[in-house]
Amino acid sequence: MTRLKARLAKSPNPFGKALFAILTKDHLSESDWEDVEDTLLMADVGAEASEQLVKQLRDDARITGQKDPAAVRRGLRQRLIDLVDPNMDRTLVAARPQANRPSVIIMVGVNGTGKTTTAGKLARLFVADGKSVVMGAADTFRAAAADQLETWGGKVGVPVVRSDRDGADPASVAFEAAERAKNDQADVLIVDTAGRLQNKANLMDQLGKIRRVIEKNLPVDEVLLVLDATTGQNGMIQAKVFAQAIGVTGIVLTKLDGSAKGGIVVSVQRELGVPVKLVGLGEGPDDLAVFDPESFVDGILG
Ligand code: GDP
Figure 1 (cartoon, rainbow, N blue to C red):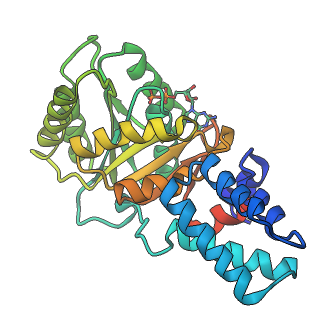
Figure 2 (cartoon, rainbow, N blue to C red):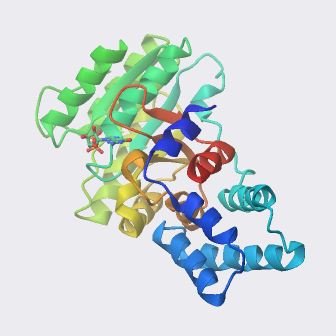
């Protein structure tokens, strides 16, 4: 069993189970179908996708007239997997071998979503895979952010490039981190950024500058947008701001362990057209899982 499936099966993500319970009733009334739709909406699947899935499930029920729970489960499982889109490319760019240079990942997202924690966990994943990693603390607004990243670096055995000055230029830290990764011939560079959303123009400016200075040394392979699953549709609005500010190549959905809103995987992918690549399942170093639609659906079906 994959970790994603095992952990989700234990977390408060009951919408798959709830759907299954309704669909295996003896007779499905109009109000049961409304319950199906409400269950999807409450899990943050989004209005359009919920409506589409209800229609498909109604057609399936009409065509097969199935009452056999195993067959209903198989059908529901497949519909949910299709909804999460198994065809999106979820490979982490940095997991591919590069030609003699470090792969570069920039982490973006609103403060508190779990960016720094995810950077640390991601570094650990790469280290476990035998790769050498450098991290850059370009969140210079909060001194605590650099301290936090440094603590993660110590925990997972990865050097952290930071500034000792509060409010130092984040781009200069990013530049130094890229230089260090290049000189050290590291396999991966992970750059943590600040997520203050006070002003979109400002954010675009800062993220654009960070990207440009890194590119003086190395191409940027991946921009991971970190999104807190518990914030639901509010998080989506913020996600769009980041997606516009800097091209996003993948989404990390954090705090899925504490959320009943796992359907956000579906809505965020549809809204941004970018795949969920990783999910956060807790605060510990090993609580990051590579996302795959089958394990996710098996997890929420319990
Ligand atoms: P940042 O401001 O975006 O860098 O966010 P942090 O990395 O500081 O994380 C904010 C809080 O969320 C911390 O208390 C983390 O331990 C917690 N956190 C991060 N990811 C997860 C997760 O996947 N699950 C849970 N339960 N907590 C998380």
